[in-house]
Image (cartoon, rainbow, N blue to C red; front, top):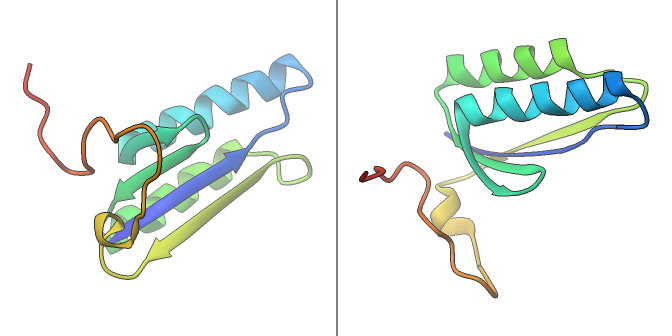
Length: 96
């Protein structure tokens, strides 16, 4: 399934900055960054549950917010992009 993860982590102190880095690291393991605090991810049902658990373990629910949107169909089919082109599509291979 395709999901979109967005987050707003309070970075008013060092602990918040560490949480922000940890949330980004979790998201990077599951998908591709499309904006500074937005990730497009392709996960299985099990991967979805793991992603939610890992994010829950990192964030401070009294100051942070993470939203996970389940996309019906694929993100590519659901997206309308304006402006700068997408560098690569979700799930496409990197050629180095």
